[in-house]
Amino acid sequence: MTLMTDTRNPSDEVIAVVTTYEPDLETLQRQFVLLAGQVKTLLIIDNGSSNAAGVAALACGHAFAQFTGVPENRGLGWAHNEGLRRALTQGAGAVLLLDQDSLPRDGMVAALVRALREQRQAGVRVAAVGARYLGSDRGHSSYFVQFGWLRFRRCFCQPGQSQTEIRADMLISSGALFAREALETLGLMDEGLFIDHLDTEWFLRAGAAGWQSFGVCDAVMDHGLGERTVRVWLGRWRYLPVHQPFRYYYVYRNSVLLWRRAYPSARWKQTDMLRLAKMFLVFSLFTGDRRQNLAMMIRGIRDGLKGRAGQLHSDLLR
Image 1 (cartoon, rainbow, N blue to C red):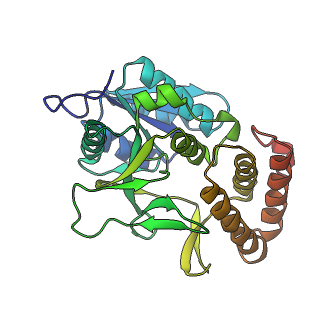
Image 2 (image 1 turned 90 degrees about the horizontal axis):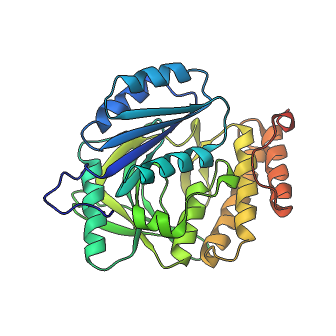
């Protein structure tokens, strides 16, 4: 099944997948309300949350929502793939992934569907199209990324710019609308990465296979990226999301795992190495739980070099 013609409601063949882990129920309820009427079906995949019963109760209050929960955290990769598999089985023409704190604005899904349809009609093999977001912590607008040498080119939507798509070498998974044919051809997410770089890996794989992706200026959502941010000078002033130390294990391990693979772009590899070198200095010397950050980054590098994937065992977090 492919996306509808212009005579159909844009939401008719789009299924949204929201993955949850210890979500804020008030924010989640807002998200469900905002999605109503924008998508055909909402699939909620809960990863062992202590408030899973509350998530299920919220889902029961919305006729278009379906809840699936497991008793333990199986990783974001598993949750994404479980939702994607269910969406494809239910006949989705395209699948929208959303984080639990992403709030779509009016018309976001319709704008994504329009862009996907227009690019396809132009003969482009489209992997996915993505929304831009306004950071909930500072209200700043996001940008779309193109790979350059030693840096990622930041491509912003200009004020007043409408019905514009910007070619992007990768998109963040939240707010991305994945074409059914791309998922069927390229496969789903790499569950072994567990949490970080899931979207990066998929888009690197898509790009290597000749598929293209686009950011859509008309598609807007509110979204948060980290527990908090820190302002640092890395060639220019920028805000970096600050995570709990264990997340840096996955960031570094998964980057090393991807560096060792053949298909990722050489430009991405080069720039990612430089980015992680800068992050290593910031988070091991200046920010947060520096000692634990350092330990997790070193362990991630070591396990990446050994080719280890999957979940970091809880006894290693102490």
